[in-house]
Image (cartoon, rainbow, N blue to C red):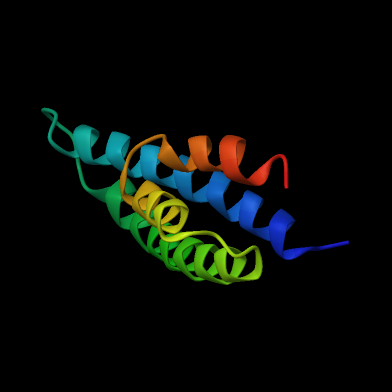
Length: 95
């Protein structure tokens, strides 16, 4: 039903979307008449998803015996825009 893979795929997707929304909110904040409401609203959920992504990546990587290079790529993906979508497609979809 809820496998580690499915949970990790969902968290990877949500973390990627929350990161993009947070970046958009940060841009909006700096616009004339912009405010930081959306940054405050999205900051905590993104932070929780980020931590969940890291923990799940480590657990999933250990379970599937990923080598150091793969683990590095998957972990670095958490800080690059759009990269969690790449990880989901390349490393999680076909397992």
